[in-house]
Amino acid sequence: MERVLDAGCLRKLLRVIGTEPSAPADLRYEPQVDLASIDREVATIQAEMDARGFIGKGRMVRTLVYMRALMVPTDNPALGLAISRLWVLGTYCDDISEYEPENSLCLLKCGLNVKQPPSLLADYCDLAFSEVAPFCDPGFLALFKFYFYQGFVGTLFEAEQHRTGTQHISNGSEYIRVMNGFCEFWFITLQFSDPCLAFSENKLFWLEIMDAIIIFVQTVNDVLSVYKEAVSEVDFANSILYKRSMKRQAPFVEVTQQAADDGLAAYEFILAAAPPGAERMRSLLENYMKGYIYFHMSCERYGWKDVFPELTYFEDASVQVG
Image 1 (cartoon, one colour):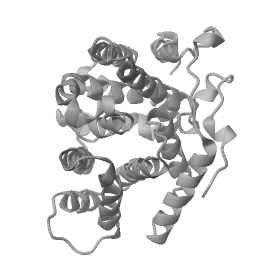
Image 2 (cartoon, helix red, strand yellow; image 1 turned 135 degrees about the vertical axis):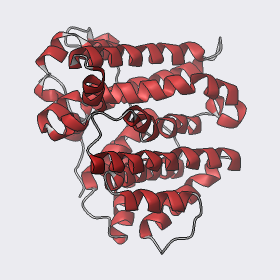
Image 3 (cartoon, helix red, strand yellow; image 1 turned 120 degrees about the vertical axis):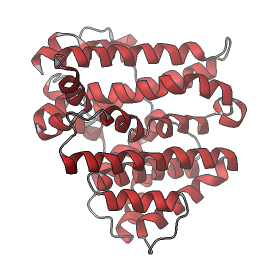
Image 4 (cartoon, helix red, strand yellow; image 1 turned 90 degrees about the horizontal axis):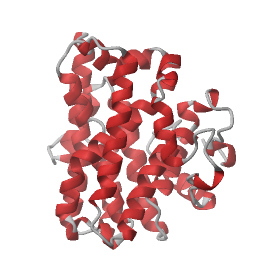
């Protein structure tokens, strides 16, 4: 971990949001979120999950609702709640599908309308998509659902890797990382934030940046998860960067450095893809990506205050629920 920090991998990402310790205050990314609105969304979603027996996820709910408010801001409370519900549900489903193939199969059958026994989880997924449906056209809704459910192909295969003990030697690890990262699902949610990013009117634009979206979401998360994974040790051994290092017989620091560089290159590509004069589009893309980096640094889950004591976690200003 010390060698990763010394190599400057993290500081490259911090410079994007101006939170590198030496950065002047006027260059820092300052998020605008309504904590009272976040509290209301958290209470609603937590109550829904409790009613279905999905207990003990209060911290996760708050974390995901904050993340949504940060990266996909909206003035419409119903829309904000609908998106937050899906983001929470996607993360919850991913967590319970990890190494549990029966959960992955349940979700895949739900998404593809394959008959299965009654499932509270499948029903909640259906509810979540029905709540977001009024805010988009049917074509986009189908695409949005596809990107949500494809993640469980990844978790299904990941469970098989761990069952067979091949996670550090299998060529399938990179494919799994693409499939279960929810990258397209996370990023294309931004289409709800403003008509200038509506998928139905900008299909070619979204196509042009799709590869970069996957790279940005994956690599930034991978690099900014390094510390929490190193602390847990078990998560570190299961991380894609460690698997990549083992598979390539390359130093872990080198692999992490390359991931940071790839993420930054994707960031620049996505911003450059906005058409000339499309300042609103560019601003929303920039806020989304800066917000993504900021979220990882400001969320207690990732533990970066241990390394940079001057950081403030968003939880410090929030009331914890659940």
